[in-house]
Amino acid sequence: MKYILFALTLTTTISLSGQISFVDKTNFAGLGGSHLNNGLALGDYDGDGREDLYVSALNGGPNRLYRNLGNFLFEDVSVQAGVNYAGTSKVSSWADIDNDGDADLYVGNRDEADLLYINQGDGTFQEEGAIRGINNLFAASSVLFSDINRDGWLDLYIGNVNNPNVLYINNGGGYFTDHTQASGTGDQAVAMGSVFFDYDLDGDDDLYLTHDAQVPYILFENMGDMTFTNISADANVNYAGFGMGADVGDFNLDGYMDIYITNLYDNVLYQNIGDGIFQNVGEAFGVNDPGMGWGNVWGDFDNDRLPDIYVVNDYYFSPYENVLYRNTGSGFEIASEGDPCESPYAGYATVAVDLNDDGLLDLLVANNGAPGGQLFQNTTSDPKHYSSLHLEGVESNRDALGAKIEVYTAAGIQYDQVIGNSGWAADNGRWIHFGLADQQVVDKVVIRWPSGAVQQIDGLDVDQKYRIREGEGVISATKEIKNQIKSCRAITADDELNISFPGAPDIKSLTITDMSGRSMPAAYTLMQEEVNVALPSLQSGVYQVMVVQADEVCVSRFWHLGGIR
Image (cartoon, rainbow, N blue to C red):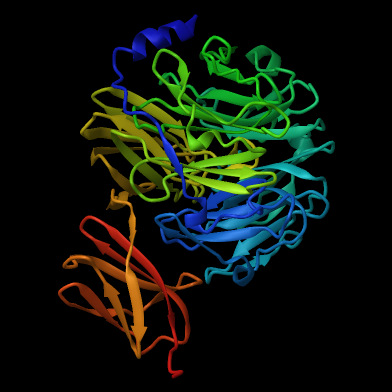
């Protein structure tokens, strides 16, 4: 009966926002085509503060790495980065396995050995799976990182199809040992979606697994000694369906993470009622979606303080489109009817991320077949306030996986956990987004780090992105630009770039990058309706210029001849 209390409590504290809506920005972003067709992984591989995108191409490979240039612009850097694997991949995940400050990449394959790409720090990667003790050959369907023993190094769990799952312990420095048998996690069912999270709030990550073919799902409790115990039946989470993806979120703001599971027919919402017990409230709250569900993701898409659920269905095999379920505080309602995010295609993976820095979560969807992938910009009216946090561990693992966050405002407390992969073949990156409704200030943030340290930060402004380091506090804060990207006209003449504006420019910053993302020197002069940029040091090639003004961002690409005339 706890879900009834949820309705009574939240309806008195939540101010609902405007209508959730999206527009399709796929072609604008340069992501059109049939290649975004399976797994999606967000990670900031170049350290510029923006989540880049890696795509596992089940059909129509090779895999692709898209560098995020900001404001819905992406550049395919797969070849120069050395990660354009041309086999058959299902899933990938970013993680700083060696704690050196940059994101490494694990790729799970279907027919060949998995790949572990080590970030070289210069925009390129080196495959070192075998060297570092990884040898998975069993058709990976899920890849999860977690510091299960809380020693500051990320461990790796791989779910395989019809073969034993594998747990690798990080011995330090990103070198691994197979710990599957000793841990008790060698599940050999038809593994699909899985997720690490702390279901019982005891400080360590537990493991939830879904299975296809009506094999009961499993909750492995982390016993704190590098072993796990199957408590599925006692916890009431041993549903036996055709499970695909699992993601966690605290939909009723009680501090306990709940589980949403997409199935091939009849999805499940497990409410965590505490004391190690879950209750299936999917049908009661109207989110048991009868479609052929694959991906799913929690996210507060209207910033009203309540996590919503986006569900990706395979429309090719069932007459059900994708669905966005809006959390109203008294249950859920369908908010996607007639919206482009319904996307009637064969949907697989999905991730939620703010791609244009306007404080609203956008959506990426991978479709198996035409039209490939899709990018949906969130255009919700009256979106309310937000706060976005990125944690950096010091004593804890660098990615801060397993950290728990409490955000305190006058409206109450919100909770979230930093996790790796979730849903189906999806990595949502490391920025944690909190909608704040009408709140004007965050009174305090409490972070419970995997190391055991507890850190409190007081008095944060809303509508900002904060980077927080363990033991130090806020190390950077960025006020996001709310205006959409605008195009400007950039023309090269000799060694000068001329950028035209409709009015007098008010330049806050101007940056030029090459197509690998490296910044170029840029000295500029302001004119009445244009900016002149000197280019004497540039070699011939394609470049991008980004001009940030007080109320807009202007981006243009240009071809520079260098010394060739």
